[in-house]
Image (tube, rainbow, N blue to C red; front, side):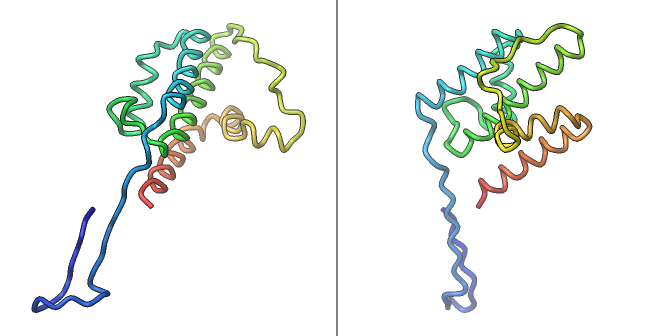
Length: 149
């Protein structure tokens, strides 16, 4: 907590008092960490991505040193990063000419609204890869800005 007081001659008015209180939310629960870890393990099994490297990238992007420092406001950012990594691995397979792993067709959206809500950002990034980096930076910036509020 930070307390700033501005005033002259030891006199403080109500408008001179600013209290800035920014407490991070709760730490991720064990189940929430398991959920993230299962997605990291899926990347390792399906695409051969080393789990330690995936976790290192997530920690660097979010700005923490370990999984035990992840707070609830970091969860959506971590899921977004994992979605981008999955998309990157899939595109890497396509560019190499190899067959990517078969998707589970039971989760395929049937209507336009389902497609937009289910994977709109990732799908859009696959269609317009030249803007993928820009969208990632905008997402991280928005996440950090929301975290500061």
